Length: 406
Image 1: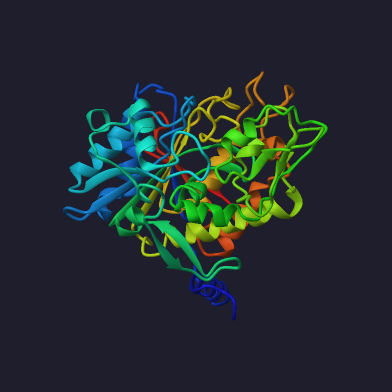
Image 2: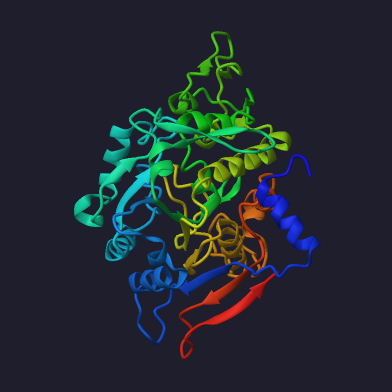
């Protein structure tokens, strides 16, 4: 079976031979305190224990806790109090945890390690508050990475931050939210964009080449300020509108996000599906050497419509739902989407006012950025399974309950 990865070939053989395939478990604890009056901190404990993180930690293991420190101006990033409890649990199991994030391709508060760490400190992530040191996983300017060999459609090697590659165990903490280019961000996005070097980010985005509508451009220069590759200038002609040099453009998409007048558009039809596939291949690269040594926590709190990389946080689209944990990143992301879609939308949010329970929220927000492409390709690449078994841990009067999802 040429062109297939080892994991794909194994899965196909299992199906052909009629082997029993066990659905991955996704553990869930709701955000309500309910009758037990358990805080979210206690629920972190519950998930940590049931997903079996402690069993993966050997004495003195170096444990990378990957999270998003948030962009300056945003407020929806993970609460340091919850992160601290993960740190404490790792220490109790004998591990040596450190918090890490990667430098960004766009200009802002996290484009190099110095600015990035200052941003993290401003957001409450310090040794005094979380009990662990902070590392920028791809070095001072994004050059600290390994070329990791993979078998993908778009890449045969990907650039993954050195600190993640060298860690003994990877714990991925993801704040689930919307994303204009991939539909939503969760564990897979954190494994790919979040764990890659700046070079890797450029390669993932290289399929995305924005264009500017000169009739809508207001010559404000905001896109120029956010462009890391100096690919945008105000034209030296009568119109004086912004122009993008396609040869310099890396496709990071920051001009699209930063334009307040809707003048910058992505060539959606071909760009976004390919971006999602490239991200999955980077996620597979991050997981090289981490099979059986990675755990994923998805936080369904403050589910905003936009990425935490923005310098603002919009109104959440649904009420707080809870926390998920799994050893399968695809199952964790699929469960997150399913739980979010099962909740009613918040009136006045980015969702339409007349919004029904069960409708696909991320597809409504970003119909041209179909997140299902990412999940389907991740499953095809052997990263995980979209089928899972949801195990609810905090139902009153029940130790746990299981609901299958096909």
